[in-house]
Length: 462
Image (cartoon, helix red, strand yellow):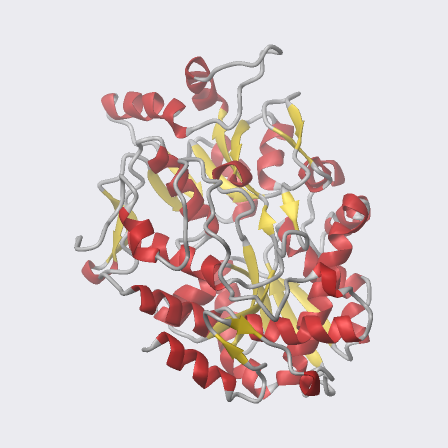
């Protein structure tokens, strides 16, 4: 599919703003006024993680109601149940792993055209290892004057431990939350940067374990079960969102060794997902729910995180995350505790609005696709244009821009809080803040894929 043609088709959809890829996404003043919602009663799903916060805040602060939307919110058992609920219409939308709409749209797993008009947050994950593994890693990590480790901690310090397990004939098992989760790709990125092979997928051969040639064996564990699974010794470490890393610290069963902020600074994390059919059938409703979520995200970051204690109190309720206030606050309020007592200031551990966190960048979608190809979830080589075409089908900055412009017009949020939509292309400038010091340019996905030492490259097949 031609990249320019794909975007040209999007221009004519009545929901969309005028836009041209590679040039700019423009706002038409005539489209600035948002009509009445076509569907008023909505049910949204989420998983019990702190980054579902924009949904909770939009509900608790009345932002949904101000848009004429009467929303019910329901926790889901796992990411597959959540995705299936959106696809079959039991849910109107949901807090999703950023990789889920992309994978569904290209047919990896359940096939369905899912889109996102709203990116929910940046950062928010960490990698935790058991106390035993941590004790084996520590001799390989430099120390600060106060005796605590120098950060970021790279997987180089874990490699001798993995080698020791292999020599003893024991598997080194790690948990992640879903095969197309940011957690899976971040854990794989961190391991591979330290010379540890996390394994390949070969769905065309019926192998979706992701453990082909693996030195560390990654498998799925639901987020709330991560600490207990670690404590039971079933896994030796995991990558998950909060509050389940801090829970390991509070329970004294493990040590978070690196945050995703240190793996890829200001990485995208969750998105709000809806079906393409929903967006086309209910365009005003889609704009209005996006408006409410944008307002909630801004509230979460306002006053230098000054609203976070109130947010933590809300999230600690059993109908939302349901973890203790102190556990959620340990990361949500701008700090992060690694080893017990090693609490450090990380004001951007959770970002909900600043740094254009809510804008659904095409380049973010393309990064996920590069990792799917790197680890074999995408079987064959694809052109750079293919990556851009898929991004345009799934990530919808045009919807976001219309919602944002209406908030500007209503004087609810100043224009300076958003990207300059007259110049925005949907692609971030090349990003350099990765733990392996590689540069990612969303305009050149194949060049990026070929830059990795470990992973499939152009021409490789399993």
